[in-house]
Image (tube, rainbow, N blue to C red):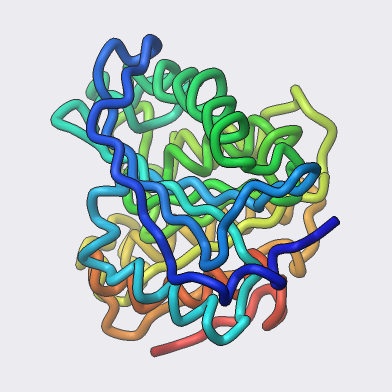
Length: 288
């Protein structure tokens, strides 16, 4: 019985701040912000869709709470629970790709971040907040390096996650330094997507990507397109090569968008709208 719409206008948006949720996988306290929809209540046999977000410490700069409130007030999205996972000083070690570290050895604790999310955080949210365990109702998003981490985890666990949101993803992550002979070689996430055969592909996952035209100014292959956009479009190409349809992928390019929470806040309504409703088509490029 779905009672989300029945209750969501009965009370305002609520947030719960947990400053010291201990993770055995990470061996540290993790700061978590939980955003509960208006009218939130535990109803027997009813569960809320769930959105996890890496780099939850940046959500206030995005005006995330007000973005959610407006989306709920306008019935633009169904009632769902959002969870901001704060990073700490070890972010460069905990975020990355589980398969391997980058060429500087960064991301060596990525497997423990995944273990924390899968084995500790998700069971807690399901037991305590009635978060859904239906993959079609569970998504993972992040920003920059946190976006790479979210994509890596969601891609590897299609039985848990229905998709990922990649805001200015650090998709340059590579296992060797840039070679002038092949500057686009050895990008780890691209290779994971192209070679990972552990799960049947394609499946019902959906992937949303965003990049800004001023995310950076580097152009390692000198093709006139900044690396942030090049790496994003190449990652989308890799997903499509695996048999996913264009309706399962969305790319949002923000004119003059920069690598910061303010730009990601501008993109957030589009992400929420598309990931929960899949409206607006697939490979459309939208400018702000």
